[in-house]
Image (tube, rainbow, N blue to C red; front, side):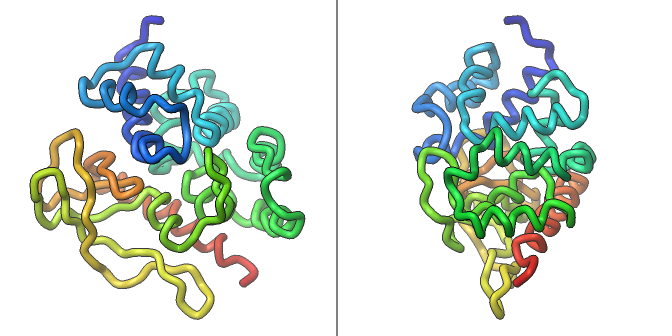
Length: 244
């Protein structure tokens, strides 16, 4: 398979966000070494796409976002960025089609209680969308290789976090970020604290805003990226507290 340059870039971009939970054994095929080699070498081919297509939650979401925006290529840059960071493609990703995606594609009826599905259904008309954070905050049972219930810690790790680089120590980036906390029965962001992020690829400078997934560096963010990530994450955080 011959990939155009823009698709090569977006597939590699997707791999960088998917890598850490795959390495931890939470989702995707048991091929984290191959995934890392693609990322490290900045190379993309059909093998990497086949790898990403085996991610049980990621791939159906990309397919849903692409379909609701009439985009044939699941690894189109806007599709991939919509899922991980956020953009206007998410505006078309909600409504009844999102609910059917959860029921038919992700088979959540087999994984959630009837009450949980009813609560999820109530959120669909009030802003539900196909951003990664929607699944993390609003489907508390993880749907990869493990089906354990999310805890506050795993939700904070599983969401795509953002923070400002404070210092660099070898393969560790120290960032300032706001963690998830429970306050008065609500899921909210706490005060700014320091967090250590694993750093295995890419280039980061002090002062850069970065994204991270399971405490692992994903990319350096632009101001617009930070704004989009905050915007969609906050929408889905509000939905997590809906009805509480």
